[in-house]
Length: 98
Image 1 (cartoon, rainbow, N blue to C red):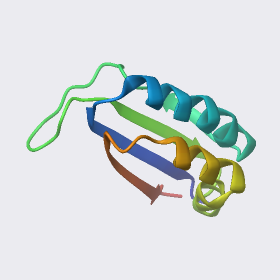
Image 2 (cartoon, one colour):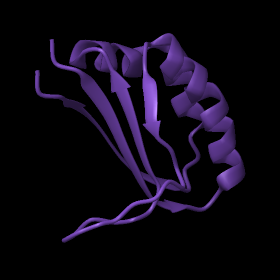
Image 3 (cartoon, helix red, strand yellow):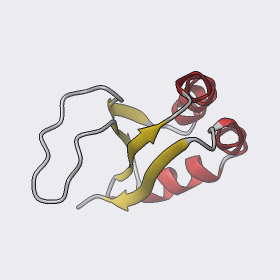
Image 4 (tube, rainbow, N blue to C red):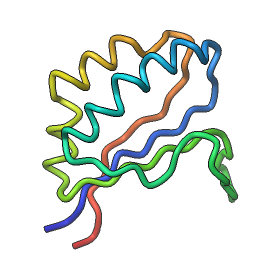
């Protein structure tokens, strides 16, 4: 079964304190959904072509379906409510290669 991944890039964060509140809710929600954090904000990035180097988060799940279910979970939806308007985020769920 192919793994699933959450890939988030944060080009702009205007309210880091509110982002911290989101992270405090999102972390336990991700763990409860079976996610494993592979990279965090502030990690080293080398970008090529049109890539950006700002704030990349990568989370792995045992399956694509598990990744989607974790996003749709009640706990993660509560975390999303705390995500501040001043955060620009490019988020996607992708299926790995089996």
